[in-house]
Length: 113
Length: 107
Image 1 (cartoon, rainbow over the protein chains, first blue to last red):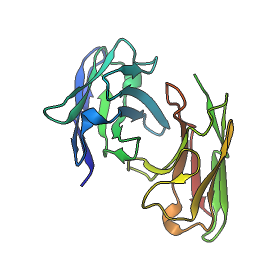
Image 2: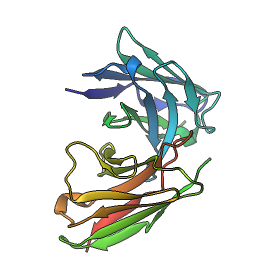
Image 3: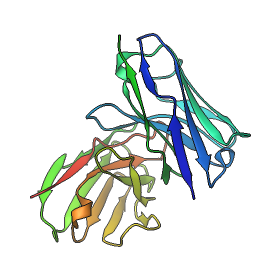
Image 4: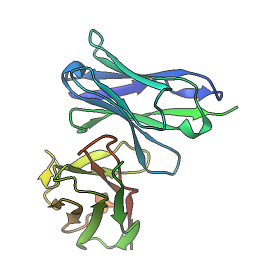
Protein backbone atom coordinates (compact mmCIF):
# COMPACT_ATOMS: atom_id res chain seq x y z
CA UNK A 1 0.00 0.00 0.00
CA UNK A 2 1.25 3.44 -0.93
CA UNK A 3 1.40 5.54 2.24
CA UNK A 4 3.02 8.55 3.89
CA UNK A 5 3.13 8.98 7.66
CA UNK A 6 4.25 12.26 9.22
CA UNK A 7 5.60 12.70 12.73
CA UNK A 8 7.52 15.20 14.80
CA UNK A 9 4.97 17.93 15.33
CA UNK A 10 4.31 19.53 18.69
CA UNK A 11 4.34 22.68 20.76
CA UNK A 12 7.45 24.84 20.50
CA UNK A 13 8.30 28.33 21.69
CA UNK A 14 8.96 31.15 19.23
CA UNK A 15 12.53 30.95 18.01
CA UNK A 16 12.67 27.22 18.61
CA UNK A 17 13.24 24.30 16.25
CA UNK A 18 11.45 21.13 15.19
CA UNK A 19 12.20 18.39 12.69
CA UNK A 20 9.28 16.80 10.90
CA UNK A 21 9.58 13.33 9.39
CA UNK A 22 7.55 11.70 6.65
CA UNK A 23 8.02 7.96 6.27
CA UNK A 24 7.01 6.51 2.92
CA UNK A 25 5.92 2.99 2.06
CA UNK A 26 4.93 1.47 -1.25
CA UNK A 27 7.10 3.81 -3.30
CA UNK A 28 10.61 5.26 -3.24
CA UNK A 29 11.08 8.80 -1.93
CA UNK A 30 14.33 9.35 -3.81
CA UNK A 31 12.71 8.55 -7.17
CA UNK A 32 9.91 11.08 -6.79
CA UNK A 33 9.48 14.73 -6.09
CA UNK A 34 8.33 15.23 -2.53
CA UNK A 35 6.66 18.29 -1.08
CA UNK A 36 5.62 19.85 2.19
CA UNK A 37 2.33 21.77 2.32
CA UNK A 38 0.90 23.46 5.39
CA UNK A 39 -2.48 24.68 6.52
CA UNK A 40 -2.87 27.25 9.27
CA UNK A 41 -5.94 26.87 11.49
CA UNK A 42 -9.06 27.73 9.51
CA UNK A 43 -7.03 28.75 6.46
CA UNK A 44 -6.23 27.38 3.02
CA UNK A 45 -3.34 25.32 1.75
CA UNK A 46 0.14 26.84 1.45
CA UNK A 47 2.97 25.22 -0.50
CA UNK A 48 6.14 25.18 1.63
CA UNK A 49 8.96 23.25 -0.02
CA UNK A 50 9.90 20.60 -2.58
CA UNK A 51 12.82 18.26 -3.19
CA UNK A 52 13.20 16.75 -6.64
CA UNK A 53 14.53 13.30 -7.41
CA UNK A 54 17.83 14.85 -8.47
CA UNK A 55 18.15 16.52 -5.10
CA UNK A 56 17.29 20.12 -5.99
CA UNK A 57 15.34 21.92 -3.28
CA UNK A 58 13.07 24.96 -3.30
CA UNK A 59 11.25 26.94 -0.64
CA UNK A 60 8.43 29.40 -0.22
CA UNK A 61 9.70 32.90 0.53
CA UNK A 62 7.97 32.72 3.91
CA UNK A 63 10.28 29.91 5.11
CA UNK A 64 13.43 30.43 3.03
CA UNK A 65 16.53 30.51 5.19
CA UNK A 66 14.70 28.97 8.16
CA UNK A 67 13.44 25.60 6.87
CA UNK A 68 15.44 22.82 5.21
CA UNK A 69 13.97 19.91 3.28
CA UNK A 70 15.98 16.69 3.02
CA UNK A 71 15.59 12.95 2.64
CA UNK A 72 17.23 9.78 3.88
CA UNK A 73 17.18 7.27 1.07
CA UNK A 74 18.12 4.37 3.35
CA UNK A 75 15.07 5.08 5.52
CA UNK A 76 12.82 6.12 2.62
CA UNK A 77 11.95 9.18 4.67
CA UNK A 78 11.48 12.88 3.96
CA UNK A 79 12.32 15.56 6.53
CA UNK A 80 11.61 19.20 7.19
CA UNK A 81 13.97 20.91 9.61
CA UNK A 82 12.29 24.04 10.92
CA UNK A 83 14.38 26.65 12.74
CA UNK A 84 13.63 30.13 14.07
CA UNK A 85 9.97 29.24 14.31
CA UNK A 86 7.37 31.99 14.44
CA UNK A 87 3.75 32.10 15.54
CA UNK A 88 2.72 32.29 11.88
CA UNK A 89 4.31 28.88 11.27
CA UNK A 90 1.53 27.31 13.37
CA UNK A 91 -0.21 24.86 11.05
CA UNK A 92 -0.87 21.28 10.12
CA UNK A 93 2.05 20.16 7.97
CA UNK A 94 1.41 17.62 5.23
CA UNK A 95 3.94 15.77 3.14
CA UNK A 96 2.91 14.84 -0.38
CA UNK A 97 4.59 12.84 -3.06
CA UNK A 98 4.41 11.16 -6.44
CA UNK A 99 2.97 14.13 -8.32
CA UNK A 100 0.89 15.11 -5.28
CA UNK A 101 -1.33 12.03 -5.48
CA UNK A 102 -0.15 10.63 -2.15
CA UNK A 103 -0.55 12.64 1.05
CA UNK A 104 0.09 11.94 4.69
CA UNK A 105 -2.50 12.66 7.36
CA UNK A 106 -0.52 15.63 8.63
CA UNK A 107 1.27 16.61 11.82
CA UNK A 108 0.41 19.68 13.88
CA UNK A 109 2.98 22.33 14.73
CA UNK A 110 2.06 24.97 17.30
CA UNK A 111 4.42 27.86 17.93
CA UNK A 112 3.49 29.64 21.12
CA UNK A 113 4.97 30.81 24.40
CA UNK B 1 4.57 34.33 -7.92
CA UNK B 2 1.51 33.17 -9.85
CA UNK B 3 -1.74 34.08 -8.09
CA UNK B 4 -4.62 31.60 -8.25
CA UNK B 5 -8.11 32.98 -7.70
CA UNK B 6 -11.09 30.69 -7.19
CA UNK B 7 -14.75 31.61 -7.44
CA UNK B 8 -17.01 31.42 -5.69
CA UNK B 9 -15.45 31.21 -2.21
CA UNK B 10 -18.44 29.18 -1.10
CA UNK B 11 -21.66 27.83 -2.52
CA UNK B 12 -24.75 26.03 -1.33
CA UNK B 13 -26.12 23.23 -3.44
CA UNK B 14 -28.45 20.27 -3.23
CA UNK B 15 -27.80 16.61 -3.89
CA UNK B 16 -28.10 16.03 -7.62
CA UNK B 17 -27.14 19.57 -8.60
CA UNK B 18 -24.52 20.37 -11.20
CA UNK B 19 -21.75 22.39 -9.57
CA UNK B 20 -19.06 24.45 -11.29
CA UNK B 21 -16.03 26.03 -9.62
CA UNK B 22 -13.67 28.29 -11.52
CA UNK B 23 -9.99 29.01 -11.02
CA UNK B 24 -8.10 31.83 -12.70
CA UNK B 25 -4.32 32.16 -12.88
CA UNK B 26 -2.58 35.54 -12.92
CA UNK B 27 -0.56 34.39 -15.96
CA UNK B 28 -0.73 31.53 -18.40
CA UNK B 29 0.03 28.15 -16.84
CA UNK B 30 -0.75 26.02 -19.90
CA UNK B 31 -2.48 22.93 -18.47
CA UNK B 32 -0.41 22.69 -15.28
CA UNK B 33 -3.41 22.74 -12.99
CA UNK B 34 -4.49 20.32 -10.27
CA UNK B 35 -7.75 20.14 -8.33
CA UNK B 36 -8.02 18.77 -4.78
CA UNK B 37 -10.87 17.91 -2.44
CA UNK B 38 -10.45 18.35 1.30
CA UNK B 39 -12.85 17.28 4.02
CA UNK B 40 -12.62 18.65 7.58
CA UNK B 41 -9.71 17.19 9.52
CA UNK B 42 -8.45 15.24 6.50
CA UNK B 43 -5.63 15.59 4.04
CA UNK B 44 -6.32 16.92 0.55
CA UNK B 45 -7.13 14.37 -2.13
CA UNK B 46 -6.05 14.79 -5.74
CA UNK B 47 -9.07 14.75 -8.07
CA UNK B 48 -7.84 16.16 -11.38
CA UNK B 49 -4.33 16.70 -12.73
CA UNK B 50 -3.10 18.39 -15.88
CA UNK B 51 -6.34 20.40 -15.93
CA UNK B 52 -8.55 17.60 -17.24
CA UNK B 53 -7.12 14.18 -16.36
CA UNK B 54 -9.12 12.25 -13.79
CA UNK B 55 -7.02 10.73 -11.02
CA UNK B 56 -7.40 6.97 -10.67
CA UNK B 57 -10.28 6.01 -8.42
CA UNK B 58 -12.05 9.37 -8.61
CA UNK B 59 -15.70 9.15 -9.70
CA UNK B 60 -16.46 10.18 -13.26
CA UNK B 61 -18.93 12.86 -12.09
CA UNK B 62 -15.84 15.02 -11.50
CA UNK B 63 -14.34 16.68 -14.55
CA UNK B 64 -11.91 19.47 -15.27
CA UNK B 65 -11.39 21.76 -18.23
CA UNK B 66 -9.45 24.80 -19.32
CA UNK B 67 -5.98 25.93 -20.29
CA UNK B 68 -3.97 29.10 -20.16
CA UNK B 69 -5.46 31.17 -17.37
CA UNK B 70 -9.04 29.92 -16.93
CA UNK B 71 -10.03 26.55 -15.51
CA UNK B 72 -13.18 24.83 -14.33
CA UNK B 73 -13.99 21.95 -12.01
CA UNK B 74 -17.44 20.47 -12.59
CA UNK B 75 -19.35 17.99 -10.48
CA UNK B 76 -22.12 16.70 -12.74
CA UNK B 77 -24.45 15.42 -10.02
CA UNK B 78 -23.53 16.38 -6.47
CA UNK B 79 -23.48 13.50 -4.00
CA UNK B 80 -23.61 13.68 -0.18
CA UNK B 81 -19.93 12.73 0.07
CA UNK B 82 -18.94 15.66 -2.19
CA UNK B 83 -19.61 18.34 0.41
CA UNK B 84 -16.09 19.58 1.06
CA UNK B 85 -13.64 22.33 0.21
CA UNK B 86 -12.02 22.31 -3.22
CA UNK B 87 -8.65 23.83 -4.11
CA UNK B 88 -6.89 24.45 -7.38
CA UNK B 89 -3.07 24.47 -7.57
CA UNK B 90 -0.73 25.45 -10.36
CA UNK B 91 2.31 23.29 -11.02
CA UNK B 92 3.67 25.46 -13.84
CA UNK B 93 6.37 27.03 -11.75
CA UNK B 94 7.53 27.44 -8.18
CA UNK B 95 6.08 28.22 -5.76
CA UNK B 96 3.24 25.88 -6.66
CA UNK B 97 0.52 28.20 -5.41
CA UNK B 98 -2.99 27.17 -4.37
CA UNK B 99 -6.26 28.97 -4.79
CA UNK B 100 -8.01 30.14 -1.63
CA UNK B 101 -10.53 27.31 -1.75
CA UNK B 102 -14.22 26.88 -2.49
CA UNK B 103 -16.42 25.43 0.23
CA UNK B 104 -19.37 23.41 -1.08
CA UNK B 105 -22.14 23.27 1.50
CA UNK B 106 -25.52 21.60 1.70
CA UNK B 107 -28.50 23.76 0.76
